[in-house]
Length: 82
Image (cartoon, rainbow, N blue to C red; front, side, top):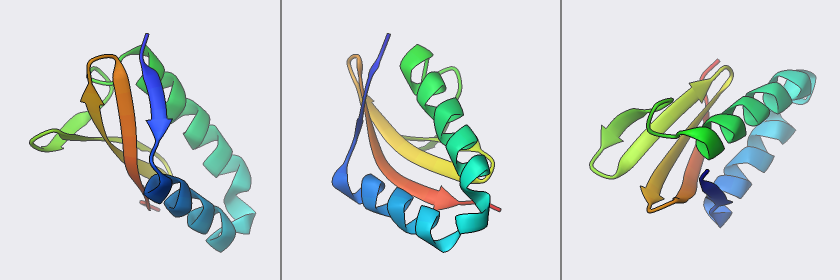
């Protein structure tokens, strides 16, 4: 099991996307739940490498970028893919 920590910038990204897309809150919530589950369970299995040390998970309409150190996952940024 992995511990997931959201960096301040990722939290700001998520809040901004939520504010920009009020009609998609159900989709955002479902994507966030899916991403959190994948990050806790096995982030390497459910993600793709972006660059050295940086990985990505996409769950429509969100993409998150994160790094892993031991059993800790650090979410660094959130983007909109839709």
